[in-house]
Image 1 (cartoon, rainbow, N blue to C red):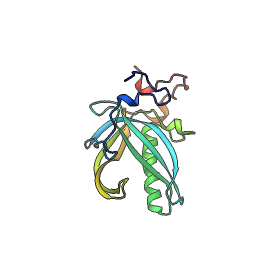
Image 2: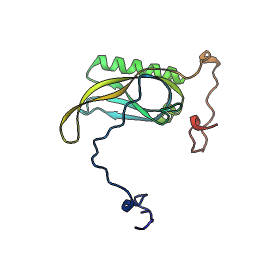
Image 3: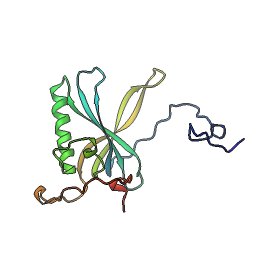
Image 4: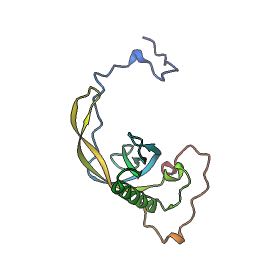
Length: 172
């Protein structure tokens, strides 16, 4: 077999073993606190198109589980007033943790270290074959600043954005 990489695919499929199934799920990380950054912030509509939420993907940046991700959704508009109140209060806690109560875009929500408290939660879902199965997912139950925050008025403004492709949390 040739060692040529297919430029379109980015690998040589002739030298790669095919997966038996796509049912494998990554095991959740254990209950605990982890230093993490939001590496993605996306505004999405709910499945019934009756509201919207922020979906933030947090990436663990230290320790044994470095590189693992946990997703959290913050309801902003929903038919349930309680869901909206919870989502907004959770987002307020996150904004307090990153020290920015007035973000102007998705980038302002990302790449600022926080401490996330993660628990494992049992859930039931429908797999790709339409079968109901039980699983365990991670859930973020608390978000705190990753530093001892001084009074807000004493905090320095973040440095202007640079053209570096390296996120701030990966530098030095």
